[in-house]
Length: 530
Image 1: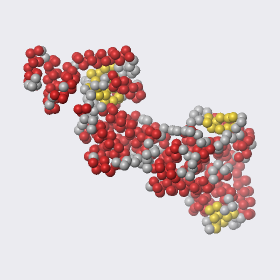
Image 2: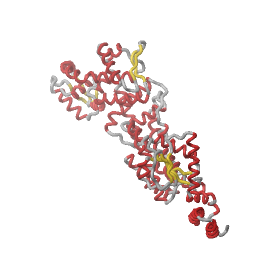
Image 3: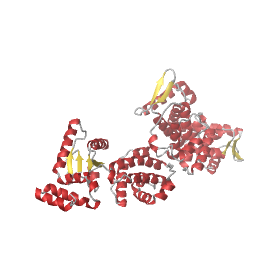
Image 4: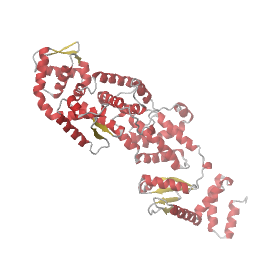
């Protein structure tokens, strides 16, 4: 007899009457497939042992006895191959969802094994978790219980639940051993249909099959372990999405659920198979590179130079990290200003939409209109900061091969030391060489050849090295006539016609390079009002 046929027979024997539809839902099979399985089972049983009447499966008295005999005779080979791993998963499921620790006696009684067998299972489970952040602890008073970070415990519970429902007999045994009930599974399936309808999504077949069991496991854990816990979701702004309030309201009949529980349920329903990959991407350098490309495209399309460009990039990065996370997981952010902004600032919205390709390449599809409008609002706000309000005289960049965190720390220290400099950003040498950036100064942790003034600095700036660096920069400014001229012209820019700025700057530079007589001629020629 096939293993799946035996699982169907187990369901039939465990219930006096059960419908074809229920068996199909519990085993994720179509009704026609269940009918064929019953035909195969009947072929090795006395005629008429199992009948289907009004879509209900009925077993005759003699058929029940024959069925039990057949399962018992053929069970030994099955148990040798599958039972040990299946039973250990069931034990772990119980330990993760039950409200109290479990003793060896309780485990042996629930799973119909000896205390020695239960102890062997526990030893194996401990070994499996030897290098994990969560551990199987023991107390004489209570027994065995998992302890560790709640987020990791729940992720492990979901993994074990998936393993169980994909294993032959897994679903049957979970119900047989009262780890969950058919009523709960049916209720959860209806809840998912309701959520699909209100959000306007279509869950995959795999999600429809798995999620009822996964959600029941999470609910059991949340109910039986009502502890205060949290995980890093505040930065991804899940609560402000269209989906979260719908799912929150769908679970309002479970008063023990707290906000972290509801957010965790929301993540599982919409994107349980993508959470880890989204977390990894949200903290990667790929997003920083995408921000660089986004800003470069904006500058090209808008024909402008952003003041304090590195600050703009940081602001975009802070927004786009959670935006990419939300988009990867299928969340839709609310933006009540969407229609009005597009109407009033259609050109900016269009340019930002075209420039958003680097972000869309990361997530594999287009950003929503709401997300594009939020990006457009950031860009437009920055454009309002006009050149006249800028304090920057010189542009600078930080090059560092010691890692992102160190380069950012160095960047922040240099910003504080030289407020008149506009620091474009911190880059690796390879990144900088691939970018056509015009800067006046390059601060680098190792020697680097460039037309710009290059200054080698240590990755960590102590008090003494800060003072030396300030003196060096001032000395370089004094010796460089071009930079000195730029500084002077910037200081008196309000008194110079805009169309004369470049001419005056070049003249001032020549002034520093000429003798006294030539200097006076230059002043009279360029600034006759003096």
